[in-house]
Amino acid sequence: MADELEPAAQVATGFLAAWSGRDAAAFAEICDPGVHYEDPLTTTPLRGPVELGEHATQLWGAFPDVRVEAADEPSAGARAIAVPCVLHGTHHAPLGGLPATGRGLRVHGVFWAERGLDGRLLRVRAFFDLWDAGVQLGLLPARGGAGEKALFLLRGFGLRATGR
Image 1 (cartoon, helix red, strand yellow):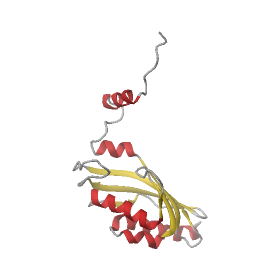
Image 2: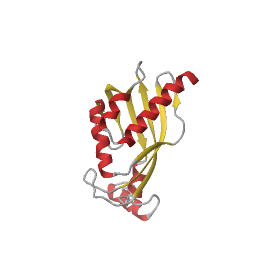
Image 3: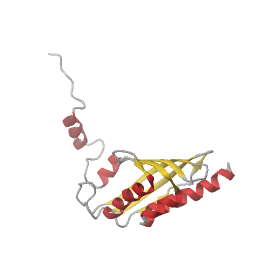
């Protein structure tokens, strides 16, 4: 396991550095040319390091001070790696049609990745709590409050036919 962790730790460090480094081309060094990437903000999977770099560029534009840092050591298997991380930043510019909020954001997440035989990333999925991010940015109501309940009622959750 220790032999597998060293290369995995290197690729994990490189991947997190690419997210924080503001150089879209940095993804080409650690990702396979056909890398498949998904996260809660992508509507369809991204293909290739260029599309991934463009996605990161949108994040850097909206959160110019963003940092993506390791939250713990990566866990690795024969060809898979899990990279716990935390994203910090301040929302200074519009993103995906949402106006800048000027609020800080701190979101924990994990990247789950499959590595190719050469160690580069073939498939990456990012998991993080999009609702919590929305709450921190003031875009969604806090969990458990009246605002959340009202939003769910408007969406049709919790409404039941009375049978009358």
